[in-house]
Image (cartoon, rainbow, N blue to C red; front, side, top):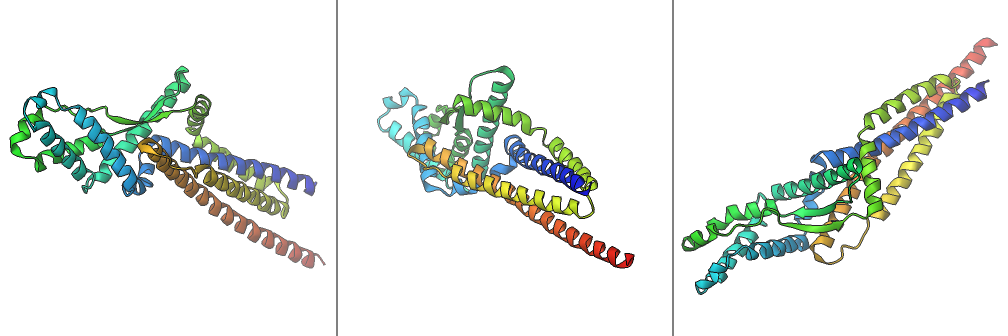
Length: 302
């Protein structure tokens, strides 16, 4: 009977660990997809990447130069002067103290647009969304700096330049099958509170069902299995997140964003790992106390 109770306890506690791990992953995904805070955890590395800053500057210059009206060619040297002013404004914007805010806004907008596209794909059976990196926050920052640097004589002409508000760097269309999986995962992840709740109930029942020492052995085994699963998942994410940046702004941004997301997930897994270690310690202490109580009971029975 004791062995049967211990086996039932082990099954319930393993199920609790599995549900808790699903909850950890779901909570991380829901937070990363639905809130802007995780962006701040990895944007800092992007803003210090000279290759990305230069690539963004080049893309912004191309969009800004295209917005110069043809009438500028009627005045000798005006187009060159306007291009020089735009270039200086962009360079100043990308070295300004407010640059981080522009990065936060751009990455957050890219996140929100991608998640909205995946939600629409799941709810309305649409096609996979195009992922793009908006340049609007940088353009707005550049506009604010443009008039500080330029010659007042060309301000009337600068006023006529309508900088594009929809400029963006296309990062590519998500492949259909991975996009479908991602869309379904987003829907499932929103229920993370239920997963943790079920895990808690299973854990309590598992501990109550087990015998005096069997419950702690079961908890030791379940916690150990959870730690192994977390370590395996962390190893997998580290290998999956290591990609070559490639060439061009789109490839570089993709690589940096994937690196940042992978690092954020690994941090969540490490938190779960240490929680598993803590449970392992509690189970070990519980087993020792149960063994000591059993020995004391046998001695008193004599």
